[in-house]
Length: 514
Image (tube, rainbow, N blue to C red; front, side, top):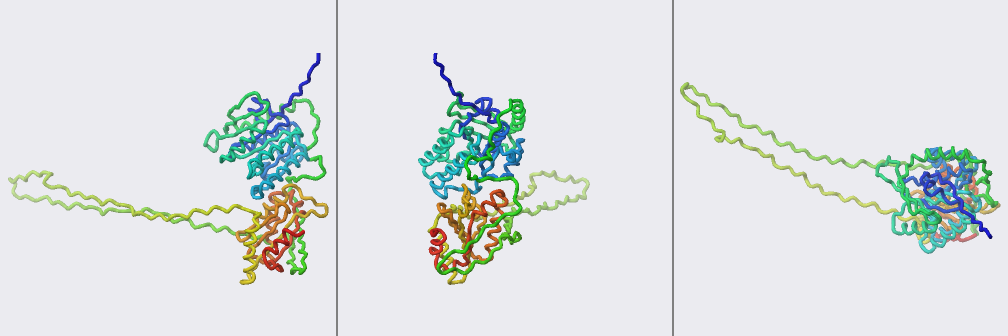
């Protein structure tokens, strides 16, 4: 009699007690979605999933917009030493720029970002991957393009035997609800977190487990207490210590491919190499750019003081005091004759005058209509026509009023064997955007990875302050990426746009020429 061997799909612990009790864990190599509003516990759930992986000695890749220090503080709240897990090589941290908005670069840019994610995951082949927050990677304008690219991403990860956990925000529109519903139908299962009380101090949550593939039980709703994470982690650690010795896995920090993926560390470098400034090559060479000493760590940093707006005038309700009423004095008549009986006094003969204070009506105050704040314009880094129009105005003012301005042309430098890594250019965009002032602007070419910055009403020496702001922000947000990024960027400084005659001539040189 011929026997048939059935290959069962193994499960792995999620670390979430109600999920492990009801589902028996998550399918190894499966893909899961967790979504919920802010403060629903979604971030803690992803960290618990990662901690469980480290306890099982499974390499984990954690991708998020949070700073490493913030992640480590959050992990400590559930008893997870993320720093130690990172130092041991079991957890690799990669940071997405916090203002990362892929929608500004179109569907092709979002698709490229997804492909970069897949290349990172395939390069390191971790046992567990967490991407929290995945929202920027679904910002396709075309829903059909979203469907095809998302399915392609899952297919590329399927062969790795990697358990994938994607975190995304609670849907707030019909379009986002459609996106969530589509993603749920493509994945092994979904976990929906909701608040059970409006009390901000409550730790109780409603956890809805929505199976799609493999799980026998249908949709299940359970109460889940965030405080149970600490107890669950301790129990899980104790249980795992009793298991037989496992084969030591390959740490996630040892990639299969040769090229290193972007990473973040916990230690902050004391010294960093600054970007190099190359002069543009022109037929008529422009005047030499002012020498900028980026090694001078004492370079002044422009600080714009915040002016506290005056407090609104307090409206005091006018008080009205009615005049005191004094009743007329009544004198009792004197009678000399002892035999005279005073007439009986009837109260009705004298009516006490009544005084009614006039009703006070508060003056009607005409409400001064408060102007509604104008909506912030959508940030667009790629509107070349709009940027060219703005820049041309500065060229005109240069000739008419001798108004100074400064142009910076920046690009990713791939020379000398320095390759650009995924999200490097997007990270630079994010840092530059935060360093801009109200009178400044920027334009990016996403395909060529080039960037033009306009510093309005600025003289050449102010370029040093601008790059100091960039350097300081880079040290704060991504200390371990700082050295690589500063080596990867080349820049030139063009005071007053000279020798270029107009905006389009400069943009052609900075963005189009090799």
